[in-house]
Length: 102
Image 1: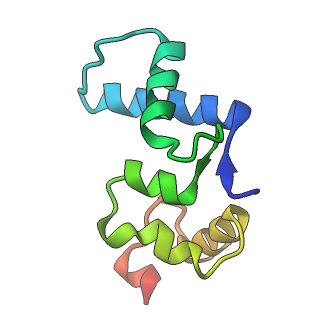
Image 2: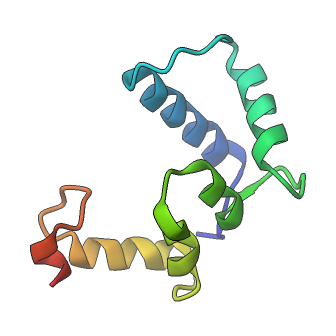
């Protein structure tokens, strides 16, 4: 809820990211999680603070028009984002379909 992915959150995020990549058939040349995390942080942690913030996360995710950054301007924290998401994703599918958006 502090606006950053850091520490154990970052490790969990990276494990889920790697799992999703494997599920999508993206082959990894390196199987060492620690090395992958260091490479990832070197590439995306632009201010080298050891955290991934929303602006850095937007570089990673395939979102058109940086949806996360636009949305971030209107909410104070990631917990507010999740509250809003849950309010509109009424069937809990993980997507906001057209009928829910209306």
